[in-house]
Amino acid sequence: KPKKIKKFPHQIPNFVGKYFYTAIIKNNEYILYGGVENSSFSEIRNGYHRLILLHILYLCLFSLSYLSKGPFESRPSRVSIHKSQGFVMGALISKFWFMLFPAKEYKIVIVGLDNAGKTTTLYKLHLGEVVTTHPTVGSNVEELVYKNIRFEVWDLGGQERLRTSWTTYYRGTHAVIVVIDSTDRARISIMKDELFKLLPHEDLQQAVVLVFANKQDLKDAMTPAEITDALSLHSIKNHDWHIQACSALTGDGLYDGLGWIAQRVAGKSTS
Image (cartoon, rainbow, N blue to C red; front, side, top):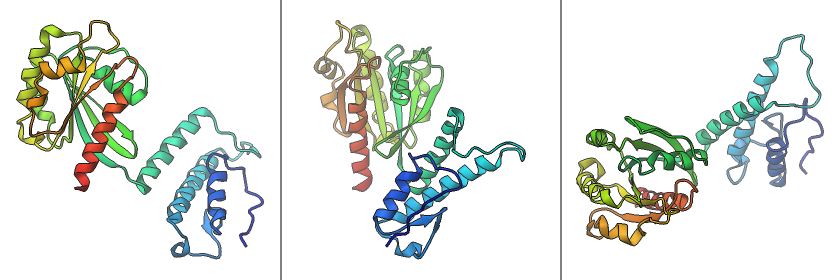
């Protein structure tokens, strides 16, 4: 019969402590202050050793935070974590989580003409909000985690003088996102030329191609079918490709496109 844990030195926040102890007790295992009583790690069923390790890490971090106070400062009987401490603790736990359960990592480059919405797309995916942007000089890079898949995403400057530098970012790329301003009918042929310049590059031979038909929230936007014809996408034979209607401002369609990439690159890595 599992031993009930009646008291802790301080109450552990329910969102971590209660969940972990409940999960372990339900499987006829129990732990006390991060240790294992009357059982060994080899006896813990269904991968719960990872759960215990994660909890031990949490207790260690909590103890460090607790002991960092001065010797004459009062210790509260109930744990009270300020927002700033909570964010730091959450970030540390997140790092340890990915150490225990490492996510697969893939590289994405985002290309497109200037004013297509590349940077807005990146930060809508990264932060979930619209940020004030300026023309990208060089690149922006952020890390996205989607369904336990980690993406390193590079947003490349789209001005004419910067497009020649795109090739320096291609090495190790698993997916290319082409962001199209669906209202820019005058320059769609320029983007077609740029697309067919990058596709034969030796570092992109295994890359999948996602076309974001951006700014679909505007009335004069070209449809995905029109953009498919304008870019001659059906002539692409050596790459998996997909076109996705989206709006970087509202976020509509962005995760549908990212989901398509996740499915394709994960499938390639297991085949």
